[in-house]
Length: 81
Image (tube, rainbow, N blue to C red; front, top):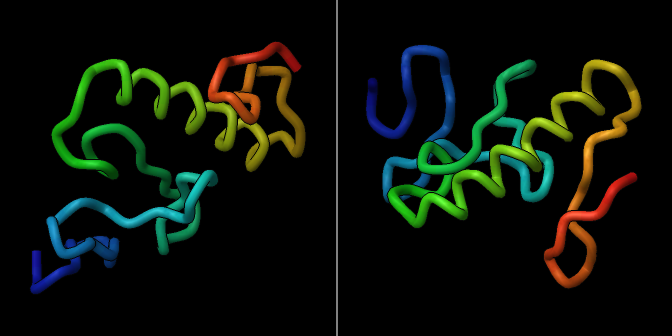
């Protein structure tokens, strides 16, 4: 790691977590996504699981152009698509 960047050129925030676009989980490097502790820092396991599910849906959308994986609604509950 050099400064705030890793050897892949991934940008990090002031707390050394990898930065990703909000709600998309994609980093500044094409084809690389981050979620859970790598993006938020150490937190509750439920946050990591939730972000992992959302990140999986975003990767599915990115690769396939659509997704049938559940997504969170406005209340934060997972709903089937």
